[in-house]
Length: 304
Image (spheres, rainbow, N blue to C red):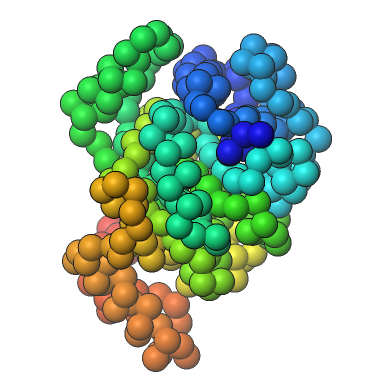
């Protein structure tokens, strides 16, 4: 029986670069020990990719009015068809290596209820990866040479025991908000939110947003607004890796996160929200993050 079931809803394979990086990612998953893979959806080229890599394909995923898969349906299908105790929803442009499996195993040894996540490393990739001997070392070298560790906001995978996250709102995949809610939910339930950044390397293959209207990122998309509504408002989508309760330290031991200026600011924000719960959501944020407020003011004046 595998340890982990990875599940994902890839984009269509009709864009050559998107197709390339998705094949790179899925191929890397199939090389992991103790892992099974489920690909969800009916996007162009997905059935062929699943067949090529010998992984499970489930086309009957529920979608929103625009034909985009719903997170709730993805979780249900993965849970029903998985043969492992750990589930992991992951974006289809992420390359994984065996340290991912070890981090999952270590986390499961030490906590019954948890979610594992980490910051990603962004990398420009324009050709298929040759998964021959030494490919991991070559990839790590390329990643470190570009040295682009993504900021704590935004998460590209969530690994958790199968019995967690039983009830998921009908979030739309590929839009903002739902990933932040995942952290909020774990914090609210008292689960361990484990930051594995220092113990594993996940690699995001950079791409454009040509698959979205106007080629723009998803933050202002109507589906994002619906995700925010389903999450219960902006306060529930402010959660990031900065809200982790544990970190996977050297030797695979769980430890408390090290205090940084960013973490201190975040804790202060949450504390003030509890006290001034009656204020609009953005007021406390503007107090705690004056630089962000300054940028908003500048943007308003530039638009006049």
